[in-house]
Length: 328
Image 1 (cartoon, rainbow, N blue to C red):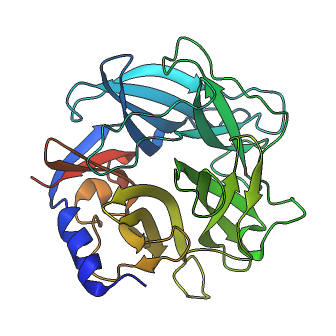
Image 2 (spheres, helix red, strand yellow):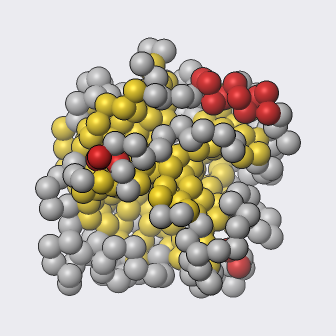
């Protein structure tokens, strides 16, 4: 267990009371799931995000797009990096997040190459629409972060699926957003760790689980159950969209909670990457503005030049887009 004193210290260090409003949105489309990093090749900040265009029911579904920024405040769309239309298990859904971003709180936020490539994990599915069950997790890689060259799908199927023989009860319906970090100490016996949320029935409860890998292509579930949840057996209780940060001798997992018809961002802490102590105090970001009054959720948090930036998906009077809160 992580002490209340340490949880308070993390909360104080990662508070972002100043809301900056929407930083990325598109009329007629839903923008979701930010993953922010520093792109050394382009010399600027990058953001992978999910774009959902509901214009055609026959082809609607997630795709992964890229935006650039010089200052983490003003963002310009660069284009699509992972598309629909693969013709396979992920034909209609392709919502990716960049893997192996430097997790150190005081680090440079650059993604690490493995086997000479950049990697992403993504939500994939064959059915059109907004997050239709079932969804699985796939992997893709690229030699560049630029959208000029499409990301490659090296496998013909997902790396984790709700139909796998070893699927655990909490993830038996659908698998959602994943975050992959490298643990150089291999405390769990493997260098690559993937945290992701899965859904079960009844009540569509979502919990966060863990898988491990030695090569980014072959993944094995870790443990018999989930790592984190709300401990409530009731309708629509979600712990989802994890992001991992290394803060001194602690690991911090940012994630969102959805319950009671709202959603907000919070965190949990661990010393061993396996047992997590959740923060139960004031959320880091919660609905309190017209543009995020419905949901303020799906976090990506980083520190740059002594300023904390908390990107999140805001749902309110301006639709669904990416908003930002900062420490000052």
